[in-house]
Image (tube, rainbow, N blue to C red; front, side):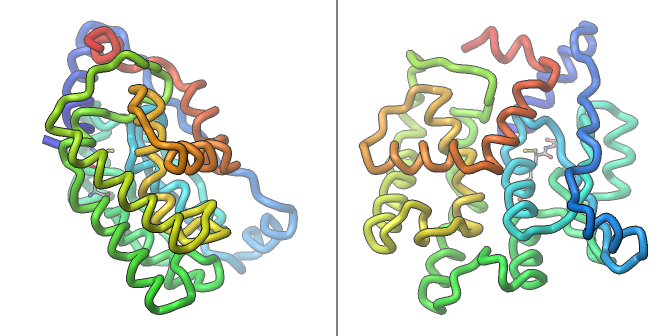
Amino acid sequence: MLHCEMIYLVTVAARRKGHSPPLPDCGPLVTGPLVKVAARRGLMATATLTISSRNYSSWSLRAWLLCKMAGLEFKVKTVSIDDPTNRAELLLLSPSVLVPRLEHDGAKIWDTLSIAEYLAETFPDAGLLPKDRVLRAHCRSISGEMHAGFYNLRSALPMNLKAHYPEFKTWAGAKPDIARVFAIWQDCLSTYGGPFLFGKKPTMADAMYAPVCTRFLTYGVMIDDVSKAYCDKIMKWPAMAEWVEAAKAEPDELEEVDAEF
Ligand SMILES: N[C@@H](CCC(=O)N[C@@H](CS)C(=O)NCC(=O)O)C(=O)O
């Protein structure tokens, strides 16, 4: 079971007990004056990114960072997936009943890595993928590795931006995943010089690994200096800081989950 699924099951229980208020709709994101004029005149495609909890949904965070990096003008639609009405609505939008889901200019995409590839193709100058063929292949490989793997890490250390458990005892099964993440980061940072994984600017790989940085901080995972500097850089990335601030302002959803740690 995906860690998010576990979280949402617990949310259902919380809702049955009457403690979980609906998630806020974060509304349209800021747009510049020229962009607004262009949009009113129908010169620009409007985009909508459907996400769930900013505090818990790591895939939502990844897609949101990717949209920001692409320079896409987009509205955010927030759905609470445990609500049966929302699930029915989401099923119409996303056949997997999972978020994130991006709709832009006729394209409907319900998978994070596909959103990343779509944005890289649509906004080739945004730098979501490195220009160099060899680096691009490396960037795709580690992005794919995160998308397809690290199950133990993701289930043992669920994203929870509001929480801080410095004494948390990490399940041994997650340790090889953690070691592998450190190895990926160290390889990229020493090969390409940082501060991001493929050099001076963030790429799709940084968006894919950003939630892992938050997990290491939330659960006090011991990290070496190089990885710590990378996590600090990610947390100070303005787009990331904006997301974290909004997550902290979100109503509490999962008191039961928090209480267990
Ligand atoms: N592989 C999918 C994973 C998406 C995913 O697991 N999303 C979670 C939220 S973080 C979700 O929608 N869970 C809904 C549920 O479990 O009911 C992607 O890349 O987008």
